[in-house]
Amino acid sequence: MQAQIDQYTAEINAFSPANADEVEAFRIKFLGTKGIIKDLFEQFKTVGPEEKRTFGKVLNEFKQLADAKYNELKENIGTSTQSKGNDLDLTLPGDGFAVGSRHPLSLIRNEIIDIFKRLGFVVAEGPEIEDDWHNFSALNFPDEHPARDMQDTFFIKKNNGKDDIALRTHTSSVQVRMMEHGKPPFRAIMPGRVYRNEAISARAHCFFHQVEGLYVDENVSFSDLKQTLYHFVQELYGEGTKVRFRPSYFPFTEPSAEMDISCTICGGAGCNMCKHTGWVEILGCGMVDPNVLENCGIDSKKYTGFAFGMGMERIANLKYVIRDLRLFSENDIRFLKQFQTEML
Image (cartoon, rainbow, N blue to C red; front, top):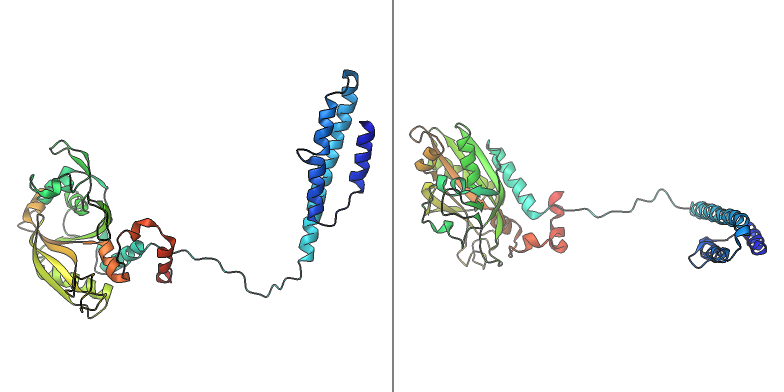
């Protein structure tokens, strides 16, 4: 064994590789799992007890020699390779890198917030898991209202009483919390995710995003509501976008209306998005019902207000011509890449 080690030691000391491949071959030959050192340690098991001390020291020194030689070769080969590559032209431009993109819902959310901030609205947020009072009762929903049915609401705890707990079905609950814990005037928008127990399709989803707004002060009128929303539409979709209001019903507003805009996809000529009417409904709105104000501890004889709510997916559909709601939650990189230019 001593003769073998002496032979291998001389070979290691004389070894001078020309490239990285030869260095790797050296590692495999001496330090690999089936290499020379591994084999020597196997032979060492057969050495007599009286010789183990001597040969053990020699074998360890040999292994240290091979390790040191390999590390030296690896470093030298790397330095040599780098020096050979110094003919790079450093005046050339650097390599480009891929730019990420924001989600279209984030883009539309930020744009909506910016528009209303310029009108003096602040942003308010609240929990996504709500109790019956904030999600339904305070908003004037009767006990028998269909929205309380399991088909529309994801209930977490349902006892047919005031202690029902559910995933919020709208961000109107944030309005209730704001009015409960503050004093008028209020002027705020409430963006956030909401949940409804609906079948998933190109036109509906079990979760989506809303932006609701609330303005409560003395002498607030329906004309204030109309002018605010008209300004919003012109800012978001461009001047010349037509607007119309249709009477509607919501438990928490009276009078109530739905607002349509001229279809941004077909320009009013008629298409699948607007069901060939030339109009698309984008939000519901109305004057805050006096019962809602009183439920929140606000004097309805002194204060009035308006509220509105819109689905961000619908707004984004018309803004970016997206025809399938499912695209918003599938995280398809091909879909998201289309919105890189919106960040510039």
